[in-house]
Length: 295
Image (tube, rainbow, N blue to C red; front, top):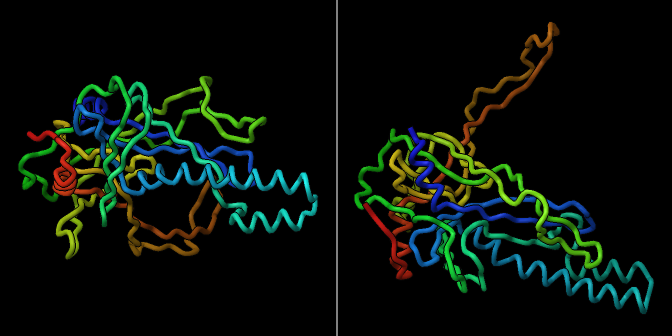
């Protein structure tokens, strides 16, 4: 049902790769997010929480570099561990603190000198404008429905994004004590589509109807990916997933596994994807004078 639509959406949907490290750890944590382009001029949309991560990356990296400079002075002038502990406290560094975060926009444009971000004031939506490129690496751009009254309960739609990161082109540089991208390893992760039915709509007093609830979850890494119909027309953008308790709880239920009786407990939830509605995306693009396409 969605074969051609996925091919269409893949032409304007791209992944954001991230690598991060926490304090006193030599493990690099790979992550992914998604964006999709809305015109030929380097404009894309993604989730606000994704865009905020991009904004925070430089602050996180600068913060840690400042810590390392002070730490080096302490090691040179005073070997007392208590002073080092005070320095860690000053910079709010503990085992769970993220100290380095690097991002990579995969196959978006040829080169990039930077980007501008517009954040929606209340909803999980953002616009990214790429700067300094010579050539874009996407083949087409999203098209939204001109008449959004066709978005109704019971409609089957598909989402596309990049969960389950498989890229491996990163390492820790032991000389600089830094994480970095490399030319070795796998530099891509496969896209992953997931279908679902429109179950309900999301709204509030401030925004009216702003979201579409789906019968299946949006997966980690699909945030910022398009929600589209069988023709590849974009109805919205994957934002988050909520978890509703079903009440079908089992406690100390006896079952037989491998010819042995075992007692299990299970607490069931349904996981429902939440997407930003196409009307909200179009209105936000218009507000910032960003061109987009409808049909």
